[in-house]
Image (cartoon, rainbow, N blue to C red; front, side, top):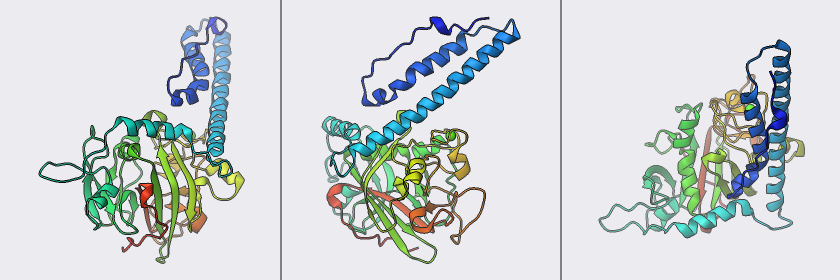
Length: 358
Ligand SMILES: [Ca+2]
């Protein structure tokens, strides 16, 4: 039995998309590994089979090392592009958004007898609806309208994409649930995850500001604002990018102020993971399983708002898997109330949220 590694040509695929260009270094080793696995004919001598297994193991290790290198390179590239000293914005992301804006006409405002939905809560606010509540919106003409909570306090026009408030909704969900969204959409403080696809559709129309509102069990409130918030499509596992923090809760999405922590906990450039789809950088385990949530895990995090809802704040256990924003209350304190909400940049003001009345 022979492993035909010496005669397999390495094919370089042409890349048409920026995303494909980023993935290109994966393809030769992936293809090589795949072909190797198929070329190894059934064992006639144990020693040859053993040799083949060792070769496969080595290739697997090399593949994993390359994946880590690629992720690190990607992080460095994003940091360079968004470095304040250079004042250069991420072309990787802005390219697609500019393109989508050109291709998709904006919906007319809600009026008349036709059922025409607003694109987002900013548009709902513009149309004169200035009281917070649930509205049906349709960010993209080809998609179905969906229900969302519009926070019209705090300057108005905020589309709420995530809320934790009472622990009634299970956030330990599979990929398909996080993709489409889940939770309750009735009461003011009902918990939900809007869904990665709906969030993606919202972000395709315009760049968005992300604001995170937080409250601890003593009623103290903090917030974090990110000037831009992007996620990529499902093919890239909804890879996250945020830039330019301001606020008083700390920049936990960037991994905090410690450089060593940032390397392992910054969520910038991370893909989304769930217990049934592990895309994190923790090569020997699953952050989603440990943290019992879907999130943009690195290895693993210092901020996870989809974690386990521990009542009364402080908690203990084998994993720091609470509803965590560690730059404010640490990894072992689970917050009482969290909201992630997005809005067009033209609405930006820097006040803190006043919609947390539970
Ligand atoms: Ca993993």
